[in-house]
Length: 449
Image 1 (tube, rainbow, N blue to C red):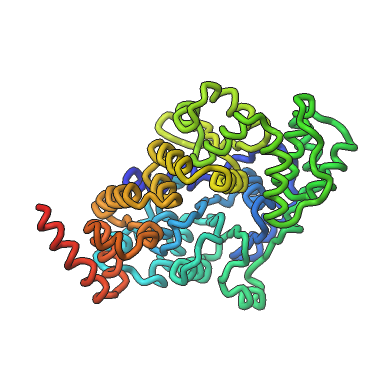
Image 2 (image 1 turned 120 degrees about the vertical axis):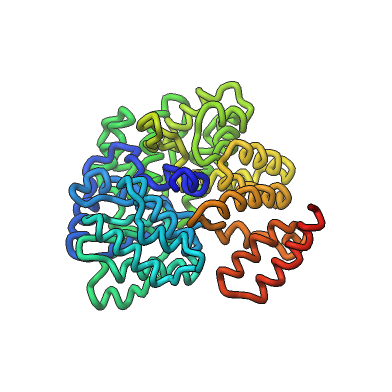
């Protein structure tokens, strides 16, 4: 089962990230642990780059007897069956055995009820004892069904289990009821701000021991974790000609983007700036793949410079050869760099770049990359290819986000896409839509032999 779902759920997605920087002791870590001793549900809500994942990674590293079960969510998980499969796969990879109740439901010929599936997941977690299910980037879940599944898991948790969510917006999980019943503890942006101790640790990591520099970074970053990390990393680059950084505190996403644009990207040599923008399309970074995407002969040097700028984190991934580090851009940095590619490059350049990145990526990531630039024909071929594999895999589902991107004309002209869409409609109980999709698709495929 694990290998069959590998294209949908890469290993880093289901592993707690290794803290990327020496931050010292985070006050929030102890508060988070204390909250988990009192309530079944802890919610972290703050803008991108505020330190949600950093806090959870620091807690995960010292979680003690409570075992973190990590799922980093993305748009494909906004389908309750895919979400359940992701959590089930995380259990299998973390504890070495599949959750039988859940797998039985997922492999069933009938579509499982949301509440039934949520209860099964809660019971499986309870059977493992002292597990904390971490749902990072919960803001990617928007459909009622996927959020109902999360609600069901939280509501049916056993006494030793916990759920932790991290989101950029307050999750629509009946928070008012949970507050009244005191079954949730919430952390916001102020709770996640770095203090003087953490900034000093960041500077020490960069080889800088200067009280004035600590005060300047605190003032300029306003405790925002991503900015503090970048400021601290760049403080060690001043000797290389990087000019002094912004003096105004950072607030929302627009200020963060301006900070990254003016004080990071525009301070780089042009080749390095091009390299980080182009390689940001990749889910993980290695020398061979980065060279194939960027065409640079200085890949090793440029990747090291990106690391020194504080843009890249190392995530430990387990495989058949043991544990090995995988490099990737911080999520907030990657989203900014991809937006810059879209803004600065022509449509033809973007199409060529996305095709190169798709060719070097997993099928799941390749589909996203191709759809971003409107390469419907290539994306549909990938969807069909993956659809064949997933339909042959018990308990695996084609993510709704893949099919939702196609227009009616695309489905009409491509019978395998229509077939997948029809099967999905059948799962939803929409018989009329299923028949409208499946009948012409089957007829077209028969004509083609």
